[in-house]
Image (cartoon, rainbow over all chains, first blue to last red; front, top):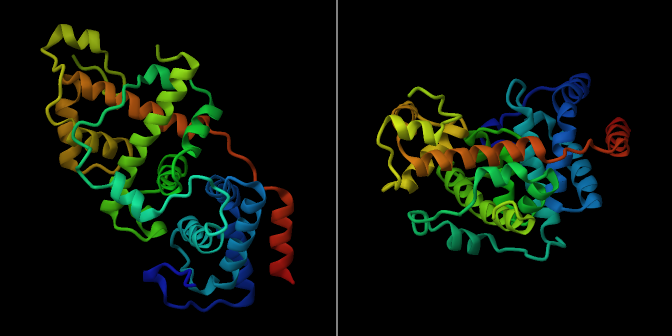
Length: 199
Length: 96
């Protein structure tokens, strides 16, 4: 599996000392974000532990393809996401495992359902929701939609960084995010209704 | 009225100018609102937003809702620290 960003395939000279130095300085500070990303992808603590560990070991092994001065966090997230797809998703316990192409066709037929799409949800109702309710609504989304929201709204990546992490064009980032947010609003709406916040 | 676009007051604004109660191009507006909130808007989108934002009730409501959801995701969802055992395993494996 290639873990390098496509445009940083050039191999850099790394001495042994430098490998450890770069690993500690550039990679280790992101371990909590990586752990949370892994947990939100797998929804399982043991899988998240394995995924983070595998990712960091791969990152160390392939450190010569990391170009210093580029975004280490995005580089690590990309490796983690690829490991998740290749190693974990197949054996995923997620009940509503959704075929990616199917999702894209259903929800992402670009303008199809965009024009009149609105969810009757008020900002005040969202404000009343507690963190666990917001997290549950997010977790209820198919993983590809969950992923773009995590990357954008929780981790603060730019569209360009997300495009590289996910290996998709920026236009797809934008439209998938749009669809993801509409789905999230539906989930939040049902929480708000259950809690009686939105009556 | 010069209220900040982050806290538009629908009632105040309505007294000062004719407000739009329906939006004919809401899908397009939602894309601009998303781009603004994600800090990915072009200069043209920013200008369009600045000029039109306080005139359209559906867009004001949408902006408030989208911002509230984005802030909730960012601030309310608990972030766990990576277990120390994982950290130690990683470090011992790369040092062996």
